[in-house]
Length: 119
Image (tube, rainbow, N blue to C red; front, top):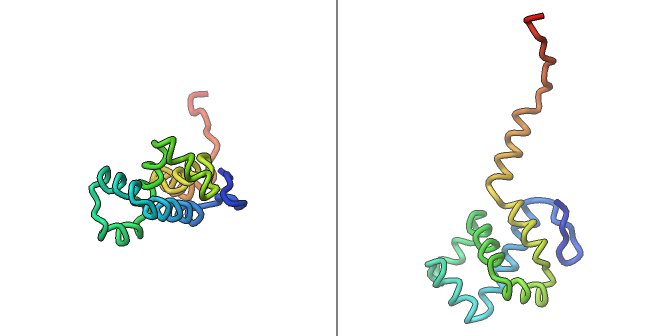
């Protein structure tokens, strides 16, 4: 997936985390946004900084934003991060993607041709 944000392509986990951190900063900068975010997540202001180091937390931030059309529009206007880039970042941060990539590494051995033993 190569959606772009701010003129760059989202090519992996690092780009996805960068988007999530920018979005989190955007939420924190506005009193109304941060209060709504804290009320919904149950976090305390003191715990956000520690939580922000977790990829699961960053994924949660992006999922929170993806459910709010007005917030998506504001992020697009202010940060120039399109909703498609946020969705792409969610995919890059999701545990399912990591599991699929790990499976691909395990399945990297070539498959042997099958023979029918009943002929």
